[in-house]
Structures are given as C-alpha cells and as structure tokens.
Image 1: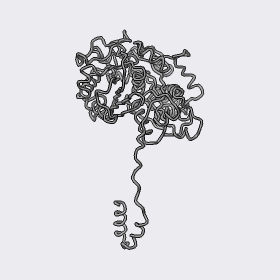
Image 2 (image 1 turned 45 degrees about the horizontal axis):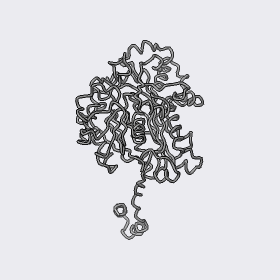
Image 3 (image 1 turned 180 degrees about the horizontal axis):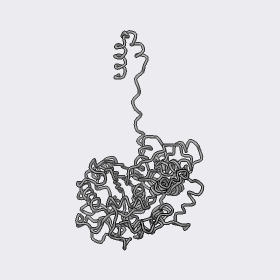
Image 4 (image 1 turned 60 degrees about the vertical axis):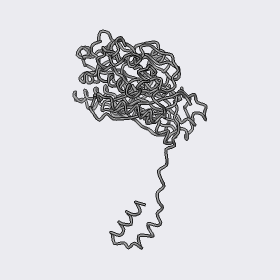
Amino acid sequence: MGCLRRALRLGLRRGLSSSSAAPAAAEQAELPPPRPSAGRRVVVTGLGAVTPLGRGVGPTWDRLVAGGCAVRALAAEDLRLPGGADAGRTLEQLPSRVAAPVPRGKGDAEFDEEAWTKDNKSISGFIAYALCAADEALRDANWLPSEDEKKERTGVSIGGGIGSISDILDASQMILENRLRRLSPYFIPKILINMASGHVSMRYGFQGPNHAAVTACATGAHSIGDATRMIQFGDADVMVAGGTESSIDALSIAGFSRLRALSTKYNSLPQAASRPFDCGRDGFVIGEGCGVMVLEALDHAKERGAKIYAEVRGYGMSGDAHHITQPQNDGRGATLAMKRALDQSGLQADQIDYLNAHATSTPLGDAVEANAIKSVFGDHATSGGLALSSTKGAIGHLLGAAGSVEAIFTVLAIHHGIAPPTLNLEKPDTLFEGAFMPLSSPKKMPIRAAISNSFGFGGTNTSLLFSCPP
C-alpha cells in the first residue's frame, strides 16, 4: 500500500482532488510478493579438468593420490615473451624460477592447444583450457542436448583471475614499436574474462545464464557457488561452472614476485617449492589450468538417470575488509565463510570429515587459515576427526582456477573415499600438534561431507560444502 499512498499524495500536491485521484488508484492492484526461491537441491553430475598433473580428471586424480608433483623449473619458452625479446635474460632476472605448467602435446594426458584454437583466432590460452575442461565435464555428465528448450535451461558460469596477460604484453609491444595497424582485431575478445563462458555457451548452444566471476583466487569457487544459486532460484536446470587461468608468463611472474608472494628459495629444487603448512614455506608456486563441474537440479538429474558424484550443500562467502593482499591475523574472514557454509548446509562441524585447505604455501596465509579451521571445528579438528590437506603441493596455485580444481578434488575425495595428501610436509608449522595435523599421505576413509576453501586478494573468501549423493 506504500506505493499507492505515495501516488495519492503526489496527486494531491499537483492540485488533483482526492475524488479524482481515488478512481485511478483503485484501479491499480497491489503488486504480488516476490517469487520465493525454488529451493531446489543441486548435485554434481560431471567433472572436467586441465591441470599441471595432466589433461583430464582421471589422470589428474591418479597422479594426485599417488603423490605426483607437477612443479618444475621454468624454461625460457614458458615466459611467452614477444618476438625479439631476450627470454633467457628475463628468466635470469626473475626471483622465482619455478612453476606448474599444463603438460602440452598430443599424448593421452597432454593438452593439445592447437586442437582448441586453430579454427578461431579469438581463443586465448585460458579460454582454450575452459573449452577442453567443459567438453570433458559435459561428456562425463552425458549432457549434450539438441533440443532448444533444454539448451535454454542450461547456463555457463566460468570465471578467471587475470585473463591473458601474455596477449596484453604482445599488444603493448606493438604499440611501443609503432605497429598499431598490426594489432589483431581479436585482441579485446581474447582477454575478456567472460569470453570463457561465452565460447562454451556458443559451442554448445546454451542459452541459460551466461556469467563470469572475477574474484582473484576465489574465482573458481565463486563460479560454482553462484551457479548453484542460479539453479536453486530456478534460473536454470543445469549449469556448467568453474574457473580457468593461463598466467605462466614473464609479466605475471614478475608482478607476483614484486609482491613477494612467490617462492624463491627452491629454484634449484622445484618439486620442493610448494610446501603448504610446512615451516620451510616461503611463497606460492604459480600454476595454470581449469576445472569445470556440471551442476544440476537433483530432480532433473534423477529424472534423466544421471550419475551423481556429490551434492552441493553449502556456499559461504565473506570479506576481510582489511588489506589488498593480506588476510586478517585472526582469520575472521575465513572463519565466517566456513561457518556460513555450515549454517546453509544444516550440518554440524563434527559432521565434516575432510577439508581441502586454500593454503598456498605463504607464511602468513597458511597460518591464518589453520587458526581459522581450529576456531570453526574446535575439538573435532584437534582430536583428529577432521582430515585436512592442501593439494597445492602437487599442482601449485592455479589462481582463478584453484577453487574449481580443488572443489573437484573435494568431490572426488567423497566419491572415492580417499583424502589426498599434502606434499613436502617435512616439518609442520608449530600451529599443528597432536592429532591436528595435515595429511602427508593419502588416507582411505569414508567421507560423508567435505569443505573446500578458497580465498583471494581483496579479502574475498569462499567455502564450498559438498556431501555424499542424496
């Protein structure tokens, strides 16, 4: 009635009599209340990945639980410098000379970039990773619909952290060399983050929500959480969701090095460089890749007989409101994200069996997260009831793709009943004692529910909570 009262008052001020205003007002019916959330349950029905451990979910998972490590020494060709640049000299100047690149080639577990880019000049590396991972996830889910109404109910939510820095570097070099007319007309489409979602939707004809989160290293997790909400609110029946990144290049590495965020102590021992929760950690190792999930309304998945890996039970978000790159010392932001995921799920802390930590191998970040985990899980954590690990020891930090790839690991931990290990945990941080200790080897165990944490620059925090299939 508030809108009607305001209309009446406005009419009277303009010299209308109450008798002349009343009929117009009476003819207007009150607006109906907002449509409530559909509240549908959301499940994971397909998985796809391109990671430093290999192309494909199967090879990646097998190497992960076997203790494989994809970190290696940087080579000059990894830097993706413009033609004429002295890559060798640039490499020598970089403080951090280790990385976890995606293996390239035409082998079964290698990424063949030409297969995804040769017919389209607007596809850059991070888009190609997304196309490859999305294709695997859709085939895994057996969801390649031809009917228009099904395509209209299928959306895409694939984000990225910083896009294609190497293409920006190439373009800027052309400007400096007065070769403006040689700049590709595809330059802008190649660097836009939302083009990963755009290309996937165009390839398969999906006309549901087309969305891209850009939240630094929480991007992949936000993309999955946002897609879950879209299904819950009835905007789609199926969502293709994840994060992608291709940022192993000279400028990205130099930039993170200037932030003192990267590991520099282990240039001669690359596979020891990424060591989450270890006393010897000194920064993260930059990685790349993509992780994509097919998310689906439970009733829709059951109706078509889809296999179900897990259910998305909770999506917690928070902001540190503290610093551009550093978390709060008390871990308040991480604590809030985990608690909100738990609250949304309806589960208690002691019902979570595994937690995949964000832990990037930075001195401050790992310690803050460990304290936040103790704060949220209390006796359940300190008594050994919560299995804990960070998988970044094996793959490095995939930036915008980290959250989605690690969410896939969390779902597979539930599916296979195996909690993956934390590599290079030789001397655990003094914050850990007794039964509260990250796993240094894979652990076979029933996992009813699990959390995947993802945090990013700007103080953005996300926790995804998955549980066994309903």
